Image (cartoon, rainbow, N blue to C red; front, top):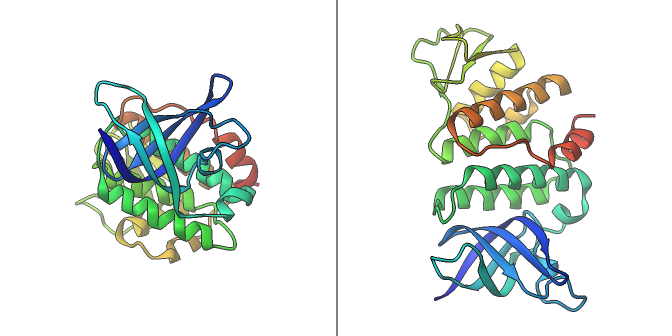
Length: 245
């Protein structure tokens, strides 16, 4: 069956001497692996498009019994130039796409998540600077869109500091058990505000790089607890060097 669908490039790996295997998140078929034959050759029509974070329209031959589909054609829906050349944006995009690839199951269609990422990538491409808090913001939103979103505790008293309760997926002023992670006042304010608002003002909450790095680690632990197959992101080394300086 020939499938034509919008897609977001999540990851690419070289295959043989001339081809590339790309993991893409498609609007109609969910996460799919495709082989772009000859993509590593100088005049290939595929290579320029297969960059993590790019928004494309793809045509591929789809057979459910196959683990890798064959890419037939590809074109931009929106060419996000700054995500290809700005080092900080590239670092954020690589980590974001790697996390997205880990939390999605093969062929799992999620139109809401797709639309969110499409909007997010277009927005990031237009920004002059990328705030470091954008990644934990993205983590919280991804959790929401795959059905394991963190929620405010019913027993919240409106305090200034508190905990993320990994097991129950709540934030509260008091810990629930040994899986609860203490948050600084800045981390707590950021998480609570992000849960209640999509306004960019949440990205202006003041936190130092150590607090941001710790919050990212806590949210990664949350994903690991609730989703099988989560591994340390290879792209985080670049991300930390550029955005956590």
